[in-house]
Image 1 (cartoon, rainbow, N blue to C red):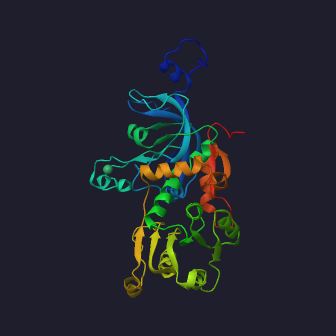
Image 2 (image 1 turned 90 degrees about the vertical axis):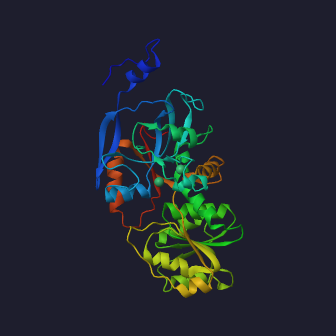
Length: 373
Ligand SMILES: [Zn+2]
Ligand SMILES: [Zn+2]
């Protein structure tokens, strides 16, 4: 470790940064359920890049999935820096960066599209053939690649807590999922699942003026679903979930749109049975590859039903999500139910894995510098 050379006079930018922290603590994923805290080299900003001191990083269902499987198809193979939802303060500005300065509070998204490939040119930047990802949020510092700095890094207004801004990434996926349904104010929307993503869907749909019916499993999720905007709640413990849900829709016709946010074959099938003729289903939860479901082709055809799935976010939905958070319309504080230190991250994941229900945890905010306030 470098000596106590901070605070001395007239150090160059380089000396200042090297003198302050040539090493840092980071959570690194080595494989299945193998997450370790390590001392690693503090990242430096190359041309076009930023380095942030991580102010808050959030746990996420995707991280849990990666932790359980030990890899992710779209990330590098282990060992990999872990975590992807975060906000922080700029500590180093690379050459040619003009939009940000040291000390700026920013949220940097976990990816950015190329804007040149087949998919990007068709407005499907979420499917970009050269989507670059950034991971390593559970760390004291993180480097932001030039393309993310340029396209998906947003300045956080004063007064907005960093942990709230860090919700931009998952919320951007949800906003896109909602936009893709084409649902309009007054429409009835069923959301199946009350995990973090399902709850965010309920809230965003409510904010967009939809009548939300939540389908949840546990007793404690009933209240949480209402807190996040569900007008009515059906529990999966009822004898016929589909009938009970349809009974709550106007004329018992079924919902205008159904969001599936559980990722099991059964809930995918329910989703199709809960939608009205001419309605749309968005399968938002992604089951493991190789999973199949059984659907009634007659009902799909004569019911004129649209089935779709949504993946990831675009720069546009990132901005919409960010606006929902900074304007205070999205109740970000309700979504963050735990607070932890960086050294607690491996244990948090062990606990998330063991969690079998009954827990009201939505997201845990990790504060590498210690919790604010
Ligand atoms: Zn996430
Ligand atoms: Zn592209």
